[in-house]
Length: 536
Image 1 (tube, helix red, strand yellow):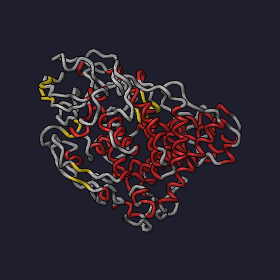
Image 2 (image 1 turned 120 degrees about the horizontal axis):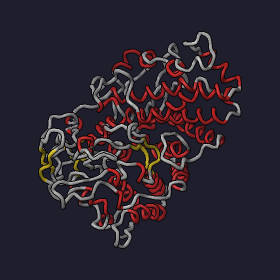
Image 3 (image 1 turned 90 degrees about the vertical axis):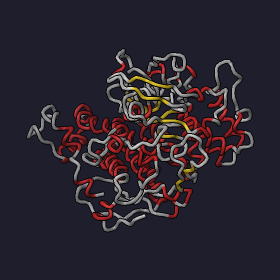
Image 4 (image 1 turned 135 degrees about the vertical axis):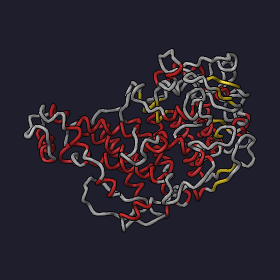
């Protein structure tokens, strides 16, 4: 990891270059670590905010950022979080890639070609991206030791942001570079734990998986305590900030991975108490004016997956202009990216589609029959859109725009409360509290029932008869989170579910893929530069 650290310019210098004159520091265009520490110790809140606020704001931007400079060039598949997770989407059972053999970007992932070997170019970007987050967080945390923070509420909040970001970076590394904790990973190696930034620090060996997850949990629990002490709770608006909801979401996920069911439930309850409202049928996907209009007009303003302002579930999201749009490019069939004009239509596996109850309006988020020809606006080129293509992320326009050529202008999100509800139900089921898990799931099913129909429940959902509560949670997670944040891949790995497309009617590739092959090898750069690093 050290070679990545050395290659990154110190964040503080970049941020403070433009404000050093306002701080009355000599020389005016340079500020040292010692001067920053002196300002932090001065108690001058204006200067402290000027020094630290930009660094602290950069913490949440890491959740919506690209990878380390030069790690993937301009290829958005591997230089952004959205791109990385879209590639994970293609490595599962539930998403079909187009309706014919394709040789476009994403084909290697969909056809389950090698993406784990130490030297393959599908591997190292997950490593680069995660370490960029950790390194950037550590640069800020260097300044925020316990003595410096003291009783300052703003510094407690800033430190909490850094801890949450660092925990996320380490958690993403573990989900990609080690077997899942409860699928054999507990007895294997974690990753190297660097808790401060220094370009000359010694290399470290990989910690154990328990040590790594203890480190992650400690960061998150400390962040939650600091947020509470700073009175920085749950934001009432959709903002691009790290707060208690983000820290609790990350903690719930990590505890679900490690089998700490009670803590996961508690973290989810904290979120759900503050985000009690779920999306309704009127904003769930781009299902308006599709099947009856040969020239559809599907506005993103009525799609909660593309417009955060109408989605009460968003925990962390970005507005138009700041939002990354890579996911939309791959998932919107009416867009001019690979998921539309490029013919890499994101379609649902018919086996999952058939398991969605007829009274569940989520079924309408997928085309029941071929749409047919669609003329894309820039050139007028026509593509044939096949059955099972998703409408979940569909739009023909950009937000607030009438020109179809600007179709990709949308918001984005990375966490929503429905996932917290599903995590809670899973933890309850894992604890053996079947009725509690079903009661939690019933909340989601009621919110996903077609208007005018009797509320669906675990006992009335047609495809769930005879299932255990855990199996019910797994099915509903696949339906609810279809196409989002690479969730199926990471959950398959965590649940021990292999890829098996052999019985699918509409998968182009009928391949299989074992769970043990979902873990990436440590990239060869790390093995080369760090003599203490052991390979998986």
